[in-house]
Image (cartoon, rainbow, N blue to C red; front, side, top):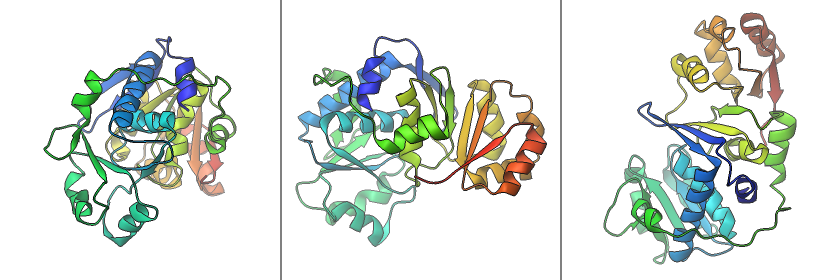
Length: 283
């Protein structure tokens, strides 16, 4: 996917609308995303991440997480997303079979994953995004000082099939689209829906905090969203909260996609919002 971002590196078109945990918003152009992605790749490479390495992202749904994912792809490494509530033997098994080369987390999730330091191999790298701490690589400081690491890429580099399918067949994206996926970080299909807008040269709306029914329509309106996608239960919750009429007043919203939606939900959504709800399965 980094090749798709690189193709648009000279574009001022908005690539990411990021809304942080506190509701503060910042927009990133494709130029900025390409630059940050290359900087993250540079830091990861300097820290010893190589092609084929697995890197655990015990992170949040943030712009930095997308930069990390694209930077790892540039190096030929593999990102491993940890669950929203990391913990237990299942997480340890995920990170040790085979073992990860590094673990990246942020301030809020750090307390939930520090126990892993006693259980992972001694050579594992630990990277912290968002603050500095002894013994952890200071990603923010390093990235700001980093030079862009850019391999000569093949412009015909193929994107992963699941991302292409989501972008073209499920969301039917256009370059002018602004897409919000309400899937929780590391949930099934989260990765494909998070990266699909980049494949189409569209804009991805990224909300760090978990999905909130009452703020959904406000975010869609303020960000001029054209595509909304998420699990069926989020659409059910919107209808249960009586917000159907607010969606009728969102003229830019042209496509709604619910994962594992029932025919009944699709019919009720159309009746209450005046907009079709398309069904999709998990990738």
